[in-house]
Amino acid sequence: MLWSEIRKAYPSQWLIIEALEAHTDPDNLRHFDRLAVVEKCEDGSMAMKRYRELHRKYPQREFYFVHTDRPELDIHERRWVGIRRGDAVSLAR
View 1 (cartoon, one colour):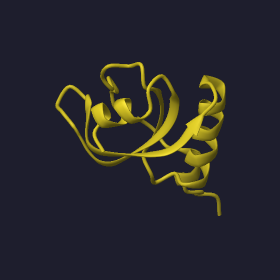
View 2 (view 1 turned 60 degrees about the horizontal axis):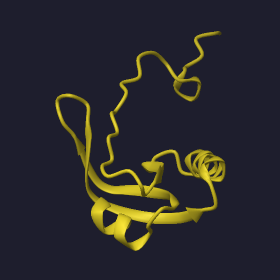
View 3 (view 1 turned 60 degrees about the vertical axis):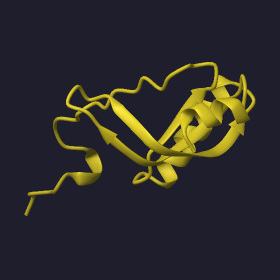
View 4 (view 1 turned 45 degrees about the vertical axis):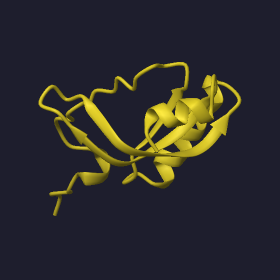
């Protein structure tokens, strides 16, 4: 689905969505070619909680929590610098 289709199907609601097809432009703005609605949520705090649970369980998938009153998805990709705890290699011998 496109964001415009999701907004029409789920007016004024908090959702967890997944980017199925997306790309990033040179200004680090994400463009979503295909989205899926994963879950409807009662409010923003529930949406954030479910997002965290899903992100922990499926870290390779691209989830977002959003409200459908937003006319556009203005999401910028952040580049991580450094080592994440799970990616660190122990050099102790």
